[in-house]
Image 1 (cartoon, rainbow, N blue to C red):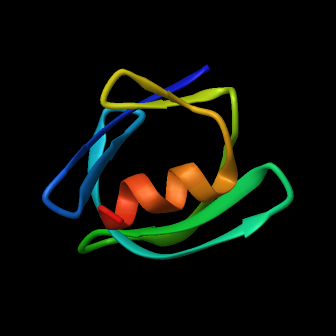
Image 2 (cartoon, one colour):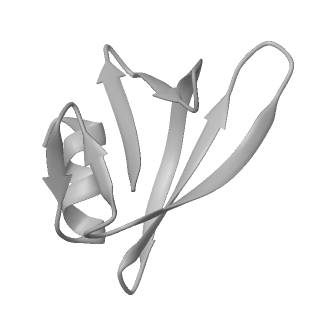
Image 3 (spheres, helix red, strand yellow):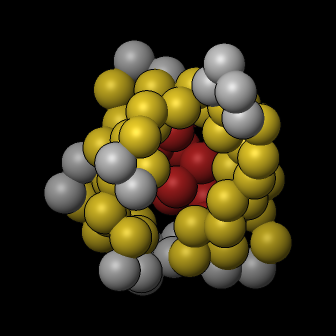
Length: 70
């Protein structure tokens, strides 16, 4: 289970804060671009295995909606 904090377009991933870039769904996976001053990489967030701010994300689209405040 991946537990993530999201606040003001910043995402805490595995203890570090990153800027959130583009994201797109692939089936039940949401690919999200994360970056900071030293890194730029993509992570795969899996539906039903990811919580954002304590809420279980049940689809890739829900993850995108949460990260874009849609």
